[in-house]
Length: 489
View (cartoon, rainbow, N blue to C red):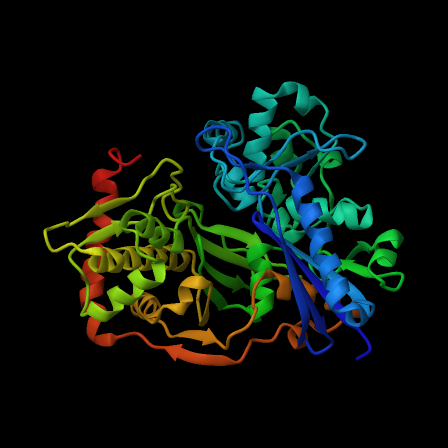
């Protein structure tokens, strides 16, 4: 082995690092926890950026002890991170306040104000102004914390802040920048008009690069700390979902994945910019040049089953198993999975979940099936609005903890009317995608050669015998939200 490449995945709960060789094979990994986000008020979510840096140092330190020889051969580093977080720095790069995270909903009023101020906002950004995006958070700070706003010299996303400490450079990649609501996504450049709406300009923004391009070099003292050579290249990297797509090789038009994690994502790569703001579709730049992607995002996927677990006192895996054991087709109960609001297709941070069709027969197994079906219907909503944007999905891979459930995958395949491929066991998350981007940046490697798809363990096919029944049930599901919207918002 002559070289290795390091992927760093920054999450709100911790940091994971993964080391790969020239062929993309895993050489070693490590992780370190971060202090959990805090919620000072209902709907708020904040985290100290120092926690990401401490966890990054701890994870790489651990890797340097367990795999010193492999780490010494690192030539490229890639970064992945949770999107949308507002990390505010002064002129000395000091953090001015805790980072306002992706799942913070305080800026709903500012979203309305921004769209009223700039009627062309959606056309430029390709996205609706949502409280989770970065720009509305700055509008909130400008209004409610003017003293802090006046001191802002740079606004960085979480992984860009870690990059700053690794390299000394203010740099961001296109995929993460697209989630700020300051990027002209079609042009892949900051928009002066969008920035002006929040009282900022280009001087407040980091330099933009493609995710597979060099974005700086590792500081000498850090290279010495980890026993690395000089001139280690740091890649632009990617937002967490684009990084996951790089990890599973979903970089060509029509390739995508369905992620059954805490939240849910239906992701598909595009050959051009394809917004559908009416359907609350996320239309972002991909982490590689001349490529875009779309996402339908639901905020409570496996988190919905976790919620039922707390209510019933049964483990999520046991609930899923009980639902599978008694499954015979669509249940009578219907669940709307809007426990913490919803993005696609409703764009309603105030929406809340609902269970209807309850009877004396409604036991934990039936409720678990309803929850799993409700999440599958939410993904079907995402597919519907992606199709409305003219998007074609040719191939889907399943990732995330919920993909361990055979029933959940069957429900998804049947409701999406698509085969879903399940990869062999392995890490296909943000850390692998980041490491692959680090390899490309360091070596100028061919993206298609590096971003390959994993070996497939199984292909889940739609149950055609249940298709009509689930179409009927989906129509009942769709009718519920407008019927009770005022009661659950």
